[in-house]
Length: 306
Figure 1 (spheres, one colour):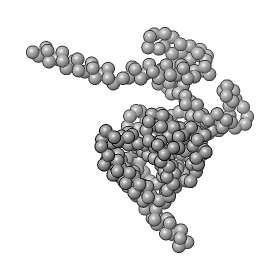
Figure 2: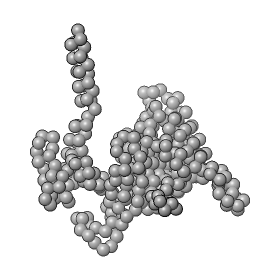
Figure 3: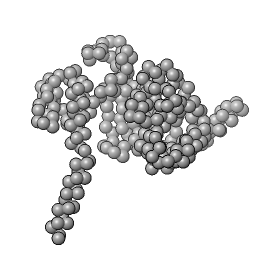
Figure 4: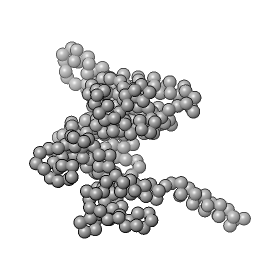
């Protein structure tokens, strides 16, 4: 919490599905209150219910906004009231903005009303940068986070063909995590067999910026039309890249924390096995162990000095 995460990608890449759907549901499951700001008028209640999002007033505040200024005022007012609460009564809160790319400036609206669409002369990138920068400063020391989606457009630079994020680069500097998404066709059935018709999308996700791990790691998340996204989608590929699971013939091998060897075909690496790998990795990387060791070393050093 206290950080900003941006998911940017082309149309239909799964940004809203992941951010306004899956992330909101997972957040609510952890008892975190969500403020969902919809600037695209695309998040209807039935769609959210289909993704198991709780739309009750106790769990979700959904707002439709189109102006950057309105979003800024809303965040400012909310945080003012939040800070006025006794610290022990302050809930954990997540702001979700879908999307930054659709937000307007007063100049946009004024030119539209006058029928003189000559552009905002660079005001929108500055306004978005100011919005994110001020939000970071407001939420930084509190249990409040921000997740945004944004659009990307094809690059016109022949020497740098990567898609460009709309709204300038200013707000990227204030973000802790930036994920670039690309839409690919999913042509396989539930058993992983290749088919000729399109059964869904493969959301190619690459971490372009992160303050917590190695950047430019990528994974493909499969989102079938019939069943929706599997919460374990992409984990096997990630574990292979990390060296946690290794290929052994035509199967994948894993040695757990107890030294037991697990060998299974790729399609059998599902929920229970992947939970085991995540649990072992989390216990191995537990920072509490390191703190205890550090404390013991300090005590030992003091005794030796005495």
